[in-house]
Length: 194
Image (tube, rainbow, N blue to C red):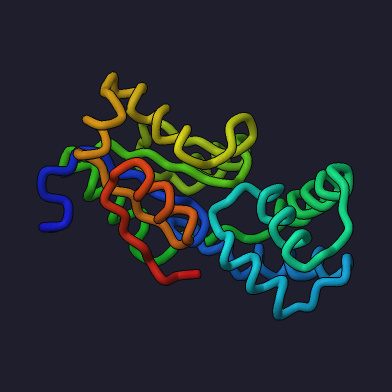
């Protein structure tokens, strides 16, 4: 694991990286946007280009980019619809995910997770799937996924962001994950699961 040499902190995105829910999430997003007049092809493109952003931001970008009239209330209704429908989506682990995370822990890595999903949903997923202990799992219920999550990880281990970033690696499946890594000066590794 030469990529992990001198790294102590492993930050992972959740959906599309640990759990394989992105195909179902994409279908729900496409359907919701289609109800507002966005073509399936365009909605799918917006969803994949904004993967990793919190859902309100994804919908705002899609509707604005497609010149679809919307209000904060419409966005809020669409978000609520998305998460209501997403609650019933199966959440299979990617093959080898649990074993890889366990191995990283055995090798002394501190595990963190960041997600655009809700905090309560993430707690349930991580407990139900018997994943190795994570130091901190942050969803977007209170604080949207972004650089602030990384600041919170650094604070958790009592390091400055600059110190933490040199010792961390961030793995994710979307452009947002790579943007966060770049903005924080963290080694970003993109996976092509989405």
